View 1: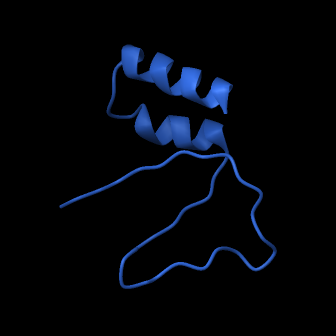
View 2: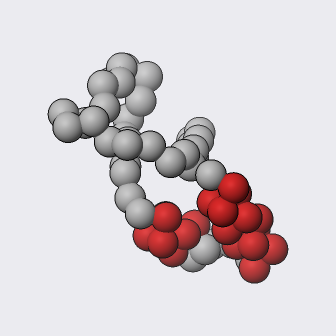
Length: 58
């Protein structure tokens, strides 16, 4: 299984995002706090600090 996770800050268009359903299985839009909760289920504090640092820079 190949999973790619991207974190970016965006304004969500009124009709949502268009993407090629043959290339992308799922797109989830969520607040940073929810994203952080999901990824920290399986990662350590160093990873968490790095992710929070990235979010602060965005």
